[in-house]
Amino acid sequence: MTIYDIAQEAGVSASTVSRVINKKKGVNKQNRILVEALLKKYNFEPNASARGLVQQSTKIIGILMSDIRTSHHAEGAYFMEQELKKYGYNCIIINSGFSDSAREESIRTLFSRRVEAIVLVGSTFQSENTKRAIQEYLNGLPVIIENGYINLPNVYGVLADEQNGISDCVRLLHTKGKRHPVFINRGDTPSNNLKILGFQNALKELSVCENPPVLWLDIEKEEWQSSYDATQKLLKDFPDMDSIIYATDFLAHAGIQALKDAGVCIPDQVAVIGVDNSTYARISSPGITSLDNKLEQLSITCADILVKVLQGEKVANKMMLFSDIVEREST
DNA sequence: TTGGGTGGGCTTAGCACACC
DNA sequence: GGTGTGCTAAGCCCACCCAA
Image 1 (cartoon, rainbow, N blue to C red):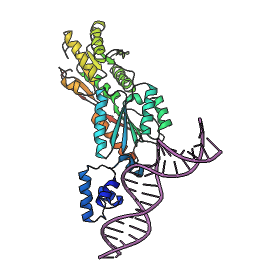
Image 2: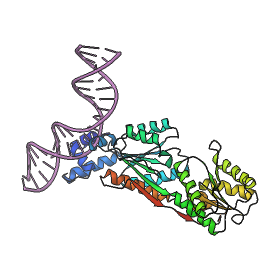
Image 3: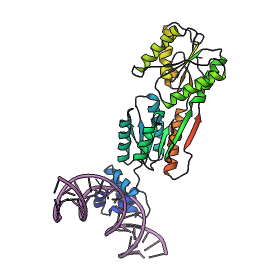
Image 4: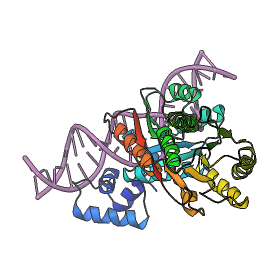
């Protein structure tokens, strides 16, 4: 069913049908009513590809994420999709995986779909390979990285200030009398590296220790279990430890369980802090004090920047949002 | 087998024309 | 002159046809 079919049945031209669909003036009332009735009768929807062809605009944004099962990223994509929908854009979400070749393939796929812009979700896209792929395939197409940045004219980045946020977490623990914190990390990502830097800087600044302990989890192992096991091992290897900062709430959730199973009193013996201020922080018992990296605000800002760029407005290429701490029972 | 030309697919914007 | 309508080109990609 095309506008020609509607036009034929209504006894008018396709132009008249198009005017009715687009609510343009200059259509006789009787014809307008007749065409509208037929559009309703056949539940007619204009062909988006053809419309995109003539308007030079597909109204489609590509969202790329490494692993859609990562709830933090999935939630970010949800907020972005909802915000973009308000401006009439639809989204194609692609699960790219972590390998460079798979990511390059995903970027090419989105380009072939003639998306108007691309959102890269997560700091892991902040890499030389992604930069090369953007230069090679997306010349001039707006790209925005959620919690990351690449120095290219068509790339925009909105970042959460997690480095200073984690430093604030260390200071909070210090005010609670905690002098032997440990950082548990999983995944060598730019975001996590900044968290570690924030952790180490704050401890040096407070003159607590010169080489603050950072424990790296094995990324080959199942995430929850590896955090659980590492926490129990910490209790044996670092008997002085009085607090743990986990790179995410999910890791902290596993850690809390390990501490409880070992009979450790939280927060008196060991205080716990997570990152993301996610559902895991809220449902955990005790509730997890968490660094709120403002996911919703971050995602909506990404969407708004993209819309502005697509509308031809000038915007800053890099923007930083401040994180803050949501205190719960774990500290 | 390869390369070039052509038309189909669908919608919209702009222009031309008829009519009152 | 204003209103209502139709014709046509444009947009891009692909399949198909024909000639070399």
